Amino acid sequence: MGSDYKKQRNCGVDCLRIVAMFAIVLQHCILHGGILQEQNIFSVKYGLVDLVTFFCFGAVNTYLLISGYINVNTKYKLSRIMYLWIEVIFYNLIINIVATLILKTPVTADIILRIFTPPPHHEYWFFTRYTLLFLLMPIINMIAHKMSKKCYRIFLIVIYVLFCFVAPVVKKYTGIDIFILKGGYSTVWFVAMYMTGAYFRLHFILEKKKKIVYFLGFVFFSLLLYLDNEFIPTFFKQYKNVEISSILSADTYSSPFTVLAVVCMLLLFVNIDFSNRIKHFVCSVGPLTFGVYLIHDNPITREYVVSRVPKMFEQNFGNSLVIWMVLCAVFFFFTCLLIEFLVQLLFKKIEVRQVCNKICLFFAKIFKKVPPIYNLFFSDLVNSCNSEKDAAKNNK
Figure: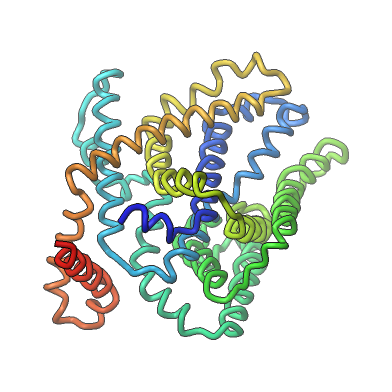
């Protein structure tokens, strides 16, 4: 089943998933490591590292686009989000145990509560919002499939005009976040990005000849984001002694430049062809990137590792500081990747996924008496499990 599944995967999407997660790690090394705060904002060193940061800003939106692109045509299984939550709690537990043994931190009721209930304590903000998005996916997918191409396109145009142009202007002059976007950190924004990815899966015809156009589009819009948000305000402050601030890019995730940049990245990567050997590697590594996020962005790892290692040798790199940042990100990325690989082997051994399926099938029996809920959240899982049982019987 594993090899057949990998053949069906879009290898370009998995490759983009890897690139996006590496960009997130790199961005966290720069921002959490406190490197920029210690530099002169007018120095070459600061400018180069800051520029790299802006090229990484679209990584979170990229994950949401990928989610829409893949899941709009995928059978909905509630057990998938349960499996991911088990992984979240597992890493929270293991990292806290290691920290207690090495750092001798006391075990309190608050820490135990944080381990098993991350959302109320604002840990793993992305996954908390993603969970809400996941619960909405059956409804979103149903709407996406029912809309015509023209209607869908008009819907997205209206949404992004309101979110990327109207909302920031209103926020700038009134302080009111009228669409509850929270700068791109809200479930509302997650839904918008998901629906954008779904649109390109359902209605967009890919053109392989335009790869270079998509790449240049990513570079162009990333540079516009940097110029609008950072370079132009800094230039005016230095040479004109005038304080100005961006409107369109003040909230970087929900900036129109970020959206256009990540759309170009999606269209670029889904067009890439790989050899069979590379396909096998990429399709094996892609699903492991979630573990990279959980390990490196855990509050303890962030405080004692990600925030400290980048500062250790940064003085030795001078204007090549960006190289040191990349090396740190590579180290963190592949270390976390190896750990996640071993954890997935353990989960496979103890059949965590099967346990999640059984729990969800139990609830499916309960909600079978409520057809709307059953059809939306459980029917795909039940049908999939029945198909697997039939296939297993036929193979005997």
